[in-house]
Amino acid sequence: MVASFHVDSDHSLERGFQSFDDTMEGLVKRIAGRSKERRADEVVSKGFNFIDAGKKSRRPFFLWLDFYDPHYDYDPPAPLKKQFESDPYTGEVAHLDAQIGVLVEGLHSRGLDLSTDILFVASHGEGLGDHGETGHGTYLFETTARVPLIVIPAPDRTGPGRDASRAAGGAPEVVKQTIGLIDVAPTIYALAGVTPPASLDGRSQREVVTGAKPGAPAQRLFLVEAMEPLLAYGWSPMYAVIEGDHKIVQATRVEAFDLGSDPGETKPIQPIPDWAERLKAFGQPLARQPELAEPEKMRILEAAAALDLPWKDRPTCLEKNSFADPRDRIDLNDRLFRARVAMDQGMIGLAGTLSQEVLQSDPGNFTALELVSFLLVRNGPALMLMDSLEVLQCNYPLRGSGYHIYGHEMQKERKFDKAEKALNVFKLIDPTGEEPYYDLAGVYAEQDQRDRAFEYLAKA
Image (tube, rainbow, N blue to C red):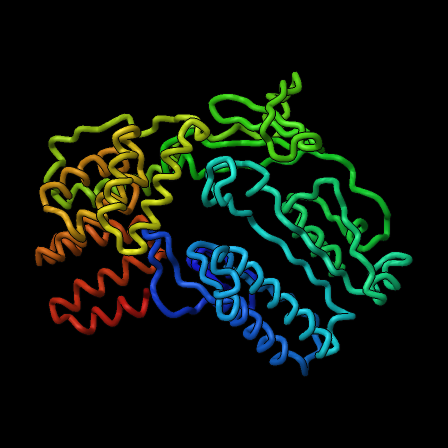
């Protein structure tokens, strides 16, 4: 049961599931930082519908419930909205926590809690201003990288004493040594008694979570990475290697921390001598924008050439990747976050000002160029838009945003042939996304091509 577009079938995550429910009302608005989503109570309700529908078969089941509530924009439901008026993020966490309780109680009332393994895991934390990061995805501080993993194994799988402790409402056991999300899938396979695929990464932690082998798991190396700086901004990606309390973080420079004595990561220490070799153990770090396969690249460029874009013979390309260390761009990252929030809230002038401030310091920043172009297609002079799109497309010819925005402008000017061609290039780049199909449907609808419009709406 999917709660947001981040894990919907557009990303091919439905493979292997007999049922994959990602149908939600509304359309994704990625550029504004918003998305369609389901609240946790709806996800839990749909989960119980699935469980109840299969109750007669008495067959084992695997149910994945995706929860999205503690994400911007933070808007907890009543009465939590009023209770957490000054801290809406915590209000959304409280709502999710309550719904997890509903889920566990629902399993109990159906007599399934004693035969069901329950795993609760988060994908990331939220910066909320720590180290200057408001959201998540750009940096690798513990605030966003360290996440909860809560496992409630079925009682018949637990070791000596664990059943009695659980029945008596005893305190949960805390495993302090690091376990990675990479271990979740192997652990689920092991709990279910199913042999995992040989290619699966990670290690089963079944003996740890069931108490079959008391004590912490063996200490290992874990890799954490943030690719958003490279893909969204043209900055250096970030990598971290964690071994016990020792953490090494690399972008264009290296920092190390002792998480035992400095959990807030405020006092860098000298890295251990062989840190580079430890990082190499995970493979070669990505050092530039990933390239498309040559045939795919040529199809896109040929389709783009047929657009006869007004700037195609006078490109003024910038050096698109500043490859700056994200830790040296904290102020720009904050401005981009605030620009998205401002655009989301209809404060177009502020969004434009913040985006332009970023471009003054970082003229090839993809996200800032994209934001400015979207703002101009909505509210700006066509000439300024074309100048912005020239820079965007010259530097990022294989990204869909420029063709998407140009298609909107041509539609606005009722140049439907050019709009259709541009949006078809966008569709070529993003063939599984809903936006190209929805926008093409709009172009056809404006030309009274109703059958074609409905055909594309059905694909959106």
